[in-house]
Length: 487
Ligand code: AMP
Ligand code: MG
Image (cartoon, rainbow, N blue to C red; front, side, top):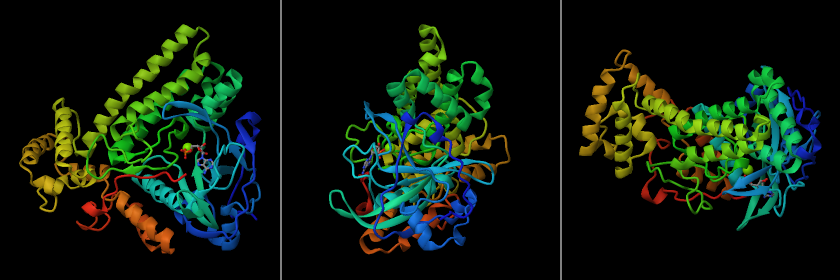
């Protein structure tokens, strides 16, 4: 079977074989397509409409290896909650790399496709709920304009997976610009040493940072580190813009491409609280909303450690240069976050007082438990009686100061409204809507709420009627306080 439009050109498989294991997906009983992403297929140049649905279900379940695929599971390591472990794709298999008509290279990966060399004690499987969850959230992230892996298909396997209860099994087809993680470098350093790190570095530069390939003759490691820092700063700032909490920012869950990867117990914050944690396994709040930049920096420091011998022959100098780069994360982040927050407030230009204005609003929002999404999006409509926060006396004082500030924007006065709409989504995949959609999908095989939710989250910046079901905050009884990764 050939996936119509696919152009496999596999390169990872030609790297040192320590970095992967050739594997075949396990055969499943009764593949059934639950979700197929035609928008993404179009972008990739895949003509899925042309294909026979049964054949596609078989490919996306792992039962049929499509022509040109050379399936492999990748090795990696990682700091999980701060502890170093050797890992690898324990339940995922990369079928191969597809080159789209616009020349971009993408991994096509099956997640939940059975055991591999790296499964440790896991069953290699995935449950339907978490795979549909990844589909919704990754597609929302993409529509929000945030770099992310994507979801091409979810197939039900017709088999049961056992977690805390019996659940329908599924396989997700994930599309990523690659699956190279910080943990892949950690694996290379721990397992193969300098030569393997060097090989991986050159490969990664060619694949993700081609503008550095001219520097390959010299010592590109430091430039590479700096480029990764740049992309990670901008990624985390984007997460903070929309209230996204990844939930499991282990070094194995951070892609060197700068895409958001590995959607587990992630969630979008409803009311503003910087300490928000949803993941049920993150008991100490290591990956809380406001910790995300510091954790990203910590992860990058782990990457830097693997690169030190390649940064300079003189170890003392290499460490100094690496430290300097890692430290730059902090001030690059603060600068970039400030810019983003001014955008959220419709402010152009910069006045030192802006920092106070931003800080004050966040303080008030935390104190009043104001909704992160709706507060910003509806600022131009102010005084909206439906939003209780806008009615509070403390808000009013802030609002007057903000209005004054907007008047000093360089652009025409109304421009701030456009800026606010561009920077603040109306729709995010709210936890209670996600949970509701997944529950009926899993329990009763009704995929309508899932489909409706997907179509709402893929046009996040479009105006919706106030009080629309996808913009409404959860009622007290609907509130989701914990998410589970369900692995
Ligand atoms: P995660 O927390 O989902 O990023 O997964 C951490 C590690 O556990 C990765 O190496 C996964 O491949 C592996 N893993 C997660 N779930 C399973 C499973 N059901 N079977 C085998 N390995 C798994
Ligand atoms: Mg992971």
